[in-house]
Length: 301
Ligand SMILES: [Zn+2]
Image (cartoon, rainbow, N blue to C red; front, side, top):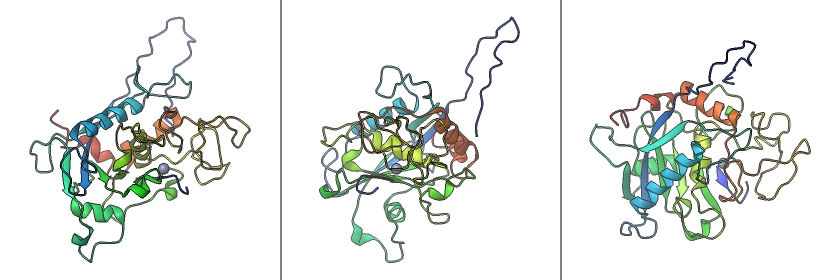
C-alpha cells in the first residue's frame, strides 16, 4: 500500500575469464510482456473530465510505467546506479478481451456505491470488481478510483500481493481466497498531471506494481535484520518518506530513490537487481502471475 498518512537469486555468473578467450556477455534475459486492463471508475463525468480520465492520460501512464521497469535511457526511469537494473518486464494495454474480441484495454464505469449488492464483502477490491473486472489469471486489473479530494495526497494506491514462497510473503495484503485482486490507484495520482504535492509523475502505479509482483517496502516489517529481503537495498527500520539523504540501520544512506519508498515521484528511479530477481521469480512461479506470461490478452500482438 502506498499511503502517506501512516504508513533467489538468479545469479548471472560470468566466469571471469580464466581462459584467454572471452565470449561477449550477451544478455539473453527474456522480456516478459504483461497485459493490463484499466478500469476507470468515475463519478459520471464526460470522458476527459474529472475522475473520468482521458485515454491519453492512461496511455501516458503505461508508457511511464514501462520507462521505470525498463530503466529506459533518456527517461526519468533511467539510473546508472551499480545496483540498479532493467527488470525486462513490460506492460501493454490488453488487445483482446476475455472473449477474444479486440479491445483497447480501457473500460469505463460509473461507480455508484448504492448499486453494490448486500452480499459483496466490505473489501475494496471485491467492491470495485463488482463494477468491472477481468480474470486476473490473464490480466492485471488496475482500477482508477474516484476518491474524494480530501484523500488526495493521503491515499495514493493499494495492491494485493502474490501467493508465493518468498520470505516476507505474510506482509502482503492478500485477496480473499480466489477473490478479486489487482491494483487501485487514486485517480488524482494516476499518470502525469500538474497536481501539487509531489505525486504527479505516475510513480504510484510503479510502486503498486512492485507490490503486485512481490516487492515489500524497503523497510519491510521495520526489522533491521529481515527488512525487505533484498540485500542491495540498504536496511532501514522506518518508513522512507524523506527525499533528503539520511541514514538507515547500518549508518549508511538509505536508497531514497527506490520505487518501494514513499518518497516523491521526482526522486524515484530505481529497482535494484535483488528486487528485480524477486519480481521475475513471482512471474515465473506464482499462481495468477505466471499465467500472465501466456495470457490471451496479448498473445496476438
Ligand atoms: Zn506500498
